[in-house]
Length: 348
Image (cartoon, rainbow, N blue to C red; front, side, top):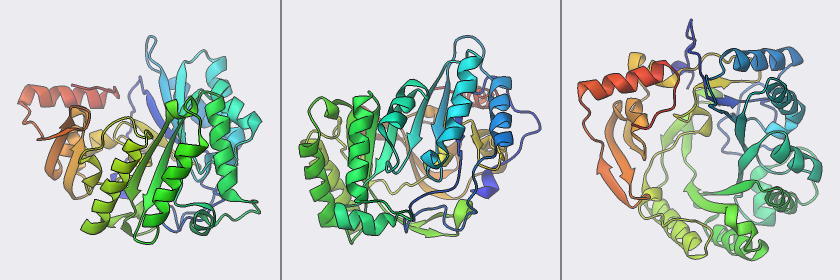
């Protein structure tokens, strides 16, 4: 990842999407975490103010909203930093929405309410890798946390009560296949029909990594047999009413990327303030991208990455159809490039 992060001398006005790491500290030690080996660091007060200032200086024109993805570490290990940045945006009259990737273990009634009302969080992704003991074994929480699985489920109820959508990712490998079906059954029975209106569940295979920290990248995907089982699990999730669309073949794609490098992110700001070093799509055009064998997306706005893949596919019809990536004429490519350079989010 480090090789595709680049500091531009001038960043565009009108930046609308941010991924912000208020801390790299986490209260869990998941064995598959890509941040293993990174230095634990909480964003200083000075960096918090610099981050806020940067967002304000690059606010979009008109009534466009800013969208922030709170990442980590565990973001709630530095919830005061989130609070300050959001308060600053509110004081400046900046409209914004947000989402979060969290392990879900640290939410209280107060923080769930704050997440909805003050941080404007619309959805949170939480990972469950098993039930009770299996979950605790895999997450390896560092602090004394009584019954971590129960604590996370309680958090999910609190978040849904505040109107925040919850996406549950089930990480699957050869060791917890049977356990995952138990988790699906539990979630179906645990949550009310009203709560399940914005509770989405999906399974994804774990994969081997090479490198550590931000240098980590997928070394290989799961076995064909594992991928087939993941497809079966997602079909089961759909039949239990916990996935709003038929997954079809979507989850058989051996494609992996971390949320922190998502194509829609204009700027990433880490806990040490090294913000301002990402214009991924523009850099891809200029410098190239790590080798990608197969790339799948449902949006032509990901054309810069698609052009770097050996084979690219456009997913349409609500993930029911997979097409070869369309060949774009020179004028369309110019339009893609222009949109990227100005920091706009575009769907051609």
